[in-house]
Length: 411
Ligand code: NIG
Ligand code: FE
Image 1 (spheres, helix red, strand yellow):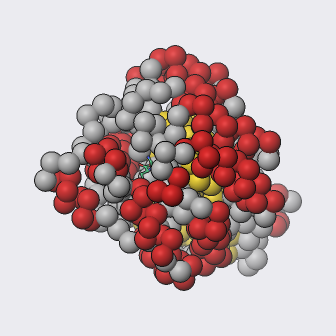
Image 2 (image 1 turned 180 degrees about the vertical axis):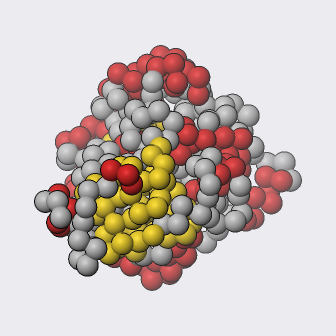
């Protein structure tokens, strides 16, 4: 028995690996492979022909029967904690109203705010649990959940606490983003700067002190907050050592992405209207572009994100569901893989990187998640497929065979 293999607890044999290591070509594939796990981390991987000898009595050997392993999927942008739903606005849009018109008429985000404020923590938990379970059943092991439907201190904290509770109830790593600057609550109508002061001087300090969020997000947009207001929130987040990210350039080009780059944001999300200057600012700050094909599809947008510019400048592209009641009521990262290819023309390898290594990077987790590599968390999805492109190609039949979280089989 070699020294290296002495401490292995679990060993996958007879598998193919889409390692998705950053910078690898395509899927970073290793066919006819094996992968070993110690203490919840990947301890060895490679061609099965090179497998070191091991003590079969002390290692739990799993015969993968030719399946493919990928990193557990990362959904790096969701809003799955909310009250009520907005099916009525879906109907209104089908009768001719636009997303912005509905928002300006008191619907949109603020109508979900009403329902979220009225909901108890238990009610919010119960509905979000169903959404998170749906993501998990499709291979998600890491998810980001945003606040942003409370819009006052008590209700923003309530949402973040529900997100923390979800992390204890399912084997999924939950990163919480504070999105107090999501929309202007009705009681602050005409006083956006006063609301931004509340976000910066009351909410962020309390949330930071009580470690209720892992990052701070802002909706920088005509129907959200201006550049100056966004900058105030970034400065407050930085003062409390919280990383930042932004919803920007979704409906217009305000320059939110370039501003976020100045503050070393982890990501800029949506970015349909981003120009080349913004893309190069992202590259300079090593930001990740989070593309959200579900919102593009559901709002029937026509302006595509600048994929060619992102490729030209070598900006990492993540893909996420943006699961939320208004612009993307979709809890399927598998569907996003398909849409990233059909709507945004990503290659299947780019799309899969978007929900693995680049999704992890968007959350600041690129040294522990999103790749099959030695020392990485053994969050592993096992798929009943013949080739990785199938994950993007067929939709509606769940190919997930098993799911491992920190080396434990959870599905
Ligand atoms: O990511 N852009 C802002 N926020 C969400 C929409 C939220 C809503 O409509 O409830 C988004 O698309
Ligand atoms: Fe969003």
